[in-house]
Image (cartoon, rainbow, N blue to C red):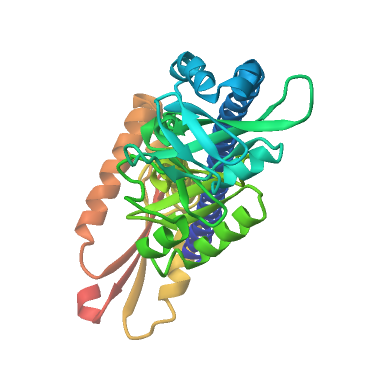
Length: 415
């Protein structure tokens, strides 16, 4: 019974150790998952901020260019606005503008592509004529219906602060798209530019992006009304607070979106990547972690098995030393009497003790050696045991003395 208690104790300790190891592997895997997710969110944040900065710099560079051009054309503009527009044709082509135009204080405008129009109702004109640099919200181009943004700066009278007109330039939003559609996350990422009310300024042509959407809040709720409700609310709060941040949302699959302010017209750059991009990296590491955990458990189990095997073997060796005669293989004297004490109290069987001694065995050892003597002892032992094959037998054999305890059901069997 003690042997089984030790076995059960060893197994229990092994089980506890395995549970502890599994818990450690699970905790470690969760830590890795959180760490990788945070790392990739930070990467998404950095990419979004870089994209917003690139777009901001591009817009500011165009505004600075227009400010320089307004100074160059101010003298021509005073005398002949149409000539000023013609003068700007080369600048429009060189800087990828669809057109550049000049406008009088009443809003009458002349463009490099020969069109005359009135822009007095345009918000960008109102800002520029008041002396501010302006960028319009996204507009539809009156020539081809394409989506455009318009830069506008005031034209000052040479040598004074008097505003005599407005210089404006039309810029295709498709050009903005080329700026923000830099490949990242292996081509899985994409970006949008939206206004503070969520209306799209620049959409994306990516295969997993929202298709033909007008407002990002509406697009989120349309894609998944249940899962995206809180995400749309969180995005609205971030955009209106003009701060960056990220949300998780669903559009066919789970995705992460980071929001970065551009610093122009309260526009925000929304940078998106599928969650699968992050999960693939996490799973790659977790698979290695689980494999390592399984390997450690296998090594631990093998170690436990080896220890138990050694323990069992050592126990057997100790039992053999204590209870088995090394020559005959019979019980030792101590083992014989221990077993006899267990059998003798049973009174329903007849019992006899037979003791045998080999006379003159010392002379045999002296003549033939102890090796032959041991062989003779084993032979005699086996023959005597074989002849006593009836009933229950306890046998003790050591040196040249054999003791047998015989138990039979009847006296006749004993005789």
